[in-house]
Length: 488
Length: 115
Image (cartoon, rainbow over all chains, first blue to last red; front, side, top):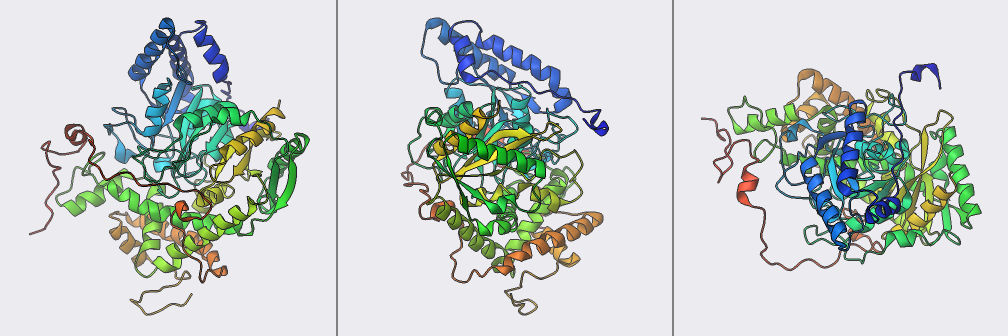
């Protein structure tokens, strides 16, 4: 390792698979309460260095673990995640637990309800350990925008874990949870999964209910899982997916058994490779790792062909207009009236609004609210917001055309491996470009999986992004499994 | 893009953001910016908007804006709406307990109108 990384530490530890843990629990080799206690010990040991968890929900976790142990003792049927320790990104609400969204403006807030994805996990037997650090309101690509301090990458503590779901990715990489939930608006699951060397899933828009997700950009926001391997990520998605009367945009499509889907192998699948994702700006080491991954898909019996996605270069400008416009509307609800922080020294309502928001929001959130408000303001609406929505359709239709020819598209997840803390904080635009390969799928509403695919010479993980058409998660999992199998 | 009148409706994407613009937008968004913050935001917004202006290269005449993926044909979007039935909502006391200031029935705020 180069001398400047001397201070860096590593906390990488691979969790057991769901199948292994399930076997242990069912055979009585380990109790769910002991497993939860072991995970809390691990968290206590490494969290001071990594800053992954913002709060722990021990009481709730240990009660759930005790229920699982009681069911096991009685021989009752166990849920698919019975006893599995899971962490939740702090943008998803858990009844009575802190929900900060990484922001000071929600300090002290204890939501009176559970997010649908959270209650589904618990209904399947999962033991919810606590809430995971993230960029403020999920706005960021490095986890450095959290009001509660940055998360450090378990692979190299001098580097960022990616963002915004940095805590969710790092928790799995450091075995501080077996699996986690995150959210992805422009790449916030896929990019940190890539930086931390774990699997991250972007479900199709509408596949997983957004009820109880603190909104950033509602037409783009998705809830999705992280896990240490593709099959476990597929199992997690199967648990949280499905229609929810509390989210009108959730899809009524039946939920397949994604883990079984992922077992089907990749042979015969047609894989598209878009030249636009291998152009200038891609780190050569990342390129080499992804090309090797593509070779392994050929070896697995996939037919690899070129596809054209010529509008790709317009995706970042489109994304940052659409996302900030929606954010400026969504974040209007944080006004010091119903929950969270209220500035104490205000004698009028108007002053109370602006003081609370000024003191409560961090710089990146303010920047995006201003940009979005500007793009929506009288005189600029057509030039910015409407234009971006038109380009959004071009980007989405381009994907639909490509998926008429191929079953999946593979790209690097990010143009670089994990960068250093502080490296990009001074330049918002440079930070936005870390999302260059992920925002297109966000705009198009399609699904994808990031799977570890080699490493740089310095040992930093590289992630391959496998994209598939709407509701074709099963296909993405099959391809990701093949890439994963070629790793070891 | 063509720039129209001063107070007109259709300003182009090439417009430079001014300090006045930042202040006006901040006011619209109920954000109070410190003077040095205004300067930084001005620089950042101009850099981002310059970058965003490359969308002007694309001719989007006749393209229907896409606000939601469910509007996309072939994307298998959300299905039927739920029945319009009254269902229990969150417990009022639980909700009010989270407010910064409340009498447990109403949210309390500072005075609305200056006298």
